[in-house]
Length: 85
Image (cartoon, rainbow, N blue to C red; front, top):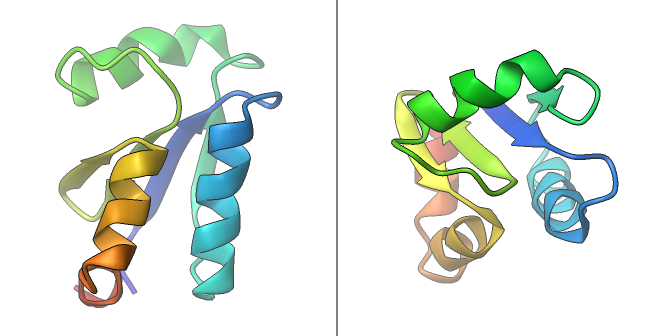
């Protein structure tokens, strides 16, 4: 399983949906809550090529994007192969 990192906020419903999808796949991930660690916000924006909304999802070396992007990968049958590397 690939290394998975998410930048989220605790109150964000899209963040919760993204985490729930990954959990349903049995994937473990590192969750950087930028509302609790605001110093990570600039790091997130840099890694996401300017993306400033949450969640920002990274699987391995791939910047997936946000919740809708994650669900689009799932709908296209591309999420499982990406998770496996």
